[in-house]
Length: 139
Image (cartoon, rainbow, N blue to C red; front, side, top):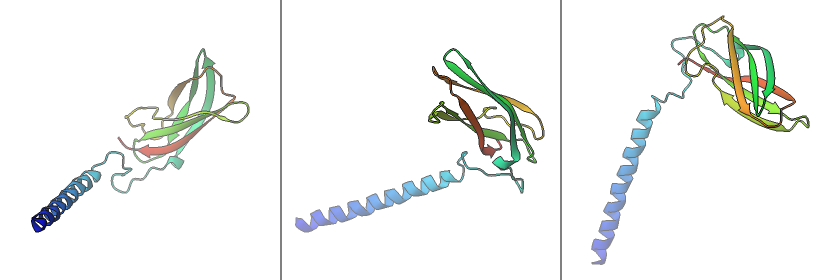
């Protein structure tokens, strides 16, 4: 009886180990199609350093803070651009930091001025703001 019990535990462990490997293989096969990967087609590359942000201005309207500006990139293809907006209070503490894609999931053509706007709920207006480009990718 004791031998049968050990055999059942052994074979159960072998079956479970096989299931784990099958599950891992399924995840690996999906990872190559992961849409979050930054993969450029061909030799075309577009880095955040190729995006210029200019004319940045912030304004307060009631409980909302808005930030506007213009994006322009020199990439060889149309791309999406992700921005990080960080707002600071007068004591230099961070009021908030948020990432956003100004053109959602649409690409911005190269060498074109693209106006953007972001907004955040804020009862206390920040005293300063920074905008930085953190990612570029073709959609």
